[in-house]
Image (cartoon, rainbow over all chains, first blue to last red; front, top):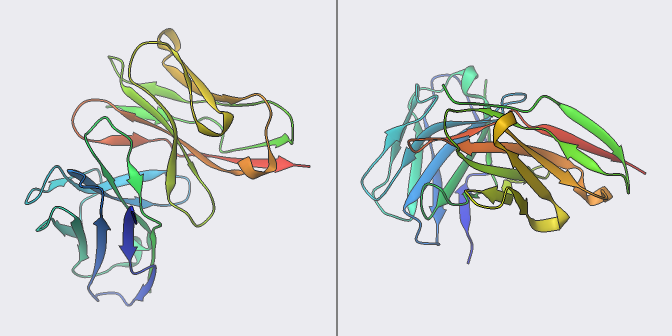
Length: 112
Length: 112
């Protein structure tokens, strides 16, 4: 079991560029999440999904879009990157809402 | 709105000393409560969780936490800290809906 994997691990973007972060899990989890982690702010939920084909907004969704076309994958897109989106992004998954979340290793994104 | 407060940004303890990390939450009912640990450059790993029942819960790596309803607290403890415990610790709650709310984190330093 690979658990939760994220690609890429690092990325540098220029303002206005777009990119997609890929999250994959092999645990057959229904729930998947995208968080961003910034110093002193803990983790903040960007978007989440409660099953294949579903997505919903979290705490800080502006500037991001997501898709869950397959149960095992959850994609996070930045259509026009801004310096404020410089952060470490974590994907997580869980079997149900009140169960442990399993986290990927993170993607460090810098927008210049 | 639900919130999680970790009052200590960082704590330094000597190896072998006891540890207590504080966590307070704001929610009308009893939420699901979690403690996660994050080592540098890694994702988060679950230490323990509380849903109901016995208010003292045991976790991995010798950690325990006590839920106190009257104080809206869920403090993490360890009787004897090891150098490998140096990391950042996050308290989290799931309180209604599908969103996990994380505290800002407490960074633990262990001195020899």
